[in-house]
Image (cartoon, rainbow, N blue to C red; front, side, top):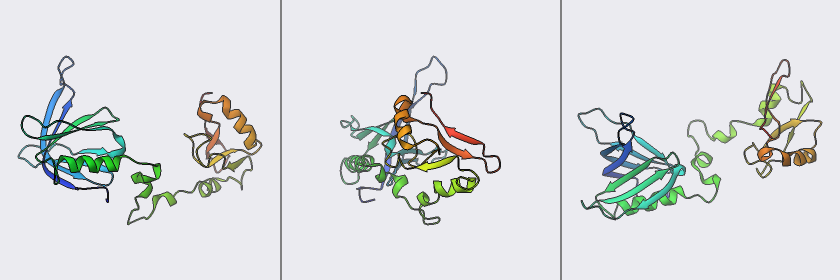
Length: 219
């Protein structure tokens, strides 16, 4: 929360386009007034309660923001910020003020929260639930595969740490289970001939008959 200059702004106007109601029509421009909430991980817009049916909230995760732009002041005296996302959504937020809890503070806050120097700064890595504790300690691959029988009911598979820093295969887990008869050096050589080094790796071992399921990509 240290990066947030402001956490709540009232009377914000949100503009965006929705698909047309008929195939030949133009996109429909939507304009809603509500409250903008800034958290350590999301930008949340809630429409002001009216007599009409309330529209759903708009949640924008910071990692999904691809472009954040300060636009020139509108002819109505409002200060706009344009937000574009990886899902090809585009929103324009219009503020009454530029400074002191307005457009500038929101722009700086979102920019500081969205730009991360490492993956460990993402919300999933530092968030700790007050109920269950750290979720990253809940799953342990060694414990799980030992439960399935690895090392006790069968010796056909073994663990390898060759991907511990994700440099061997960036799309695979850090802990890999591979056939016991294949050495790490053999896999390193074979990986050169497979898409993104996606070698066959164990994902599931049946406790009763040792039937296995593996990760595997087309070479």
